[in-house]
Length: 265
Image (tube, rainbow, N blue to C red):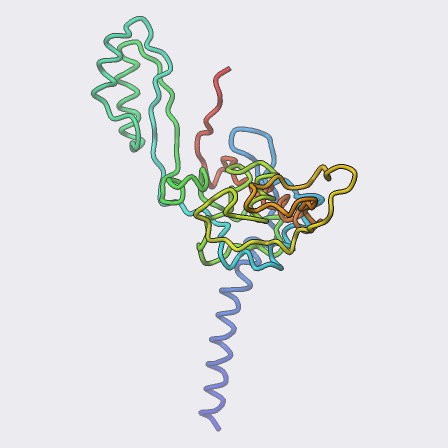
């Protein structure tokens, strides 16, 4: 009897500790999370998804997209890059100096040293912070994904397999709605090497009326409908594409900083 009670108590404590560690602790840490602020701005992040994009998350979930895609950019570290913005009044000396300096993939100390050497002879530089890692090198994102990125996602579709590329920043990499729709209907029409299955059931093949529908797909001949017919997206296809376009984890945050590259004015 005593042994049975001891086993019960030990089991209860073990399960209770696990529940506290895996359920209660994350809830206390993230359950009351609110919008954060984009680094060096007053803009809030993330923005609430609206309309079709909100519905598109459910279409994404219902069609099992998380089985082949992740929405989680991984990062292994950060590096500094020193960029020359002006050679000042001594361009030859500055040019000769920077040709002998390593200006990318630097530590903070190395960046400060290069900065000091260039400015000492009249040059002007800008130091940028960049994220590093295999996902960053693939162009899948500018920084690691953090908890704030998923504030308005229910459920969060992190995924666990990358049969296809990560989608955390696909709205930046492929911002065209028509491209997204073409890719859903006929992946090989936009990427001949794609292994993604077609989502043709999200589209309708119908006869062309007096004029083609404004949202009819413009497909290469081998993927197009028969003469006199057109392919138009159903609402679910529009919603899924809108959700994909909303995936834009491209803002520097306190917990995931980087230096945005801005176009010269």
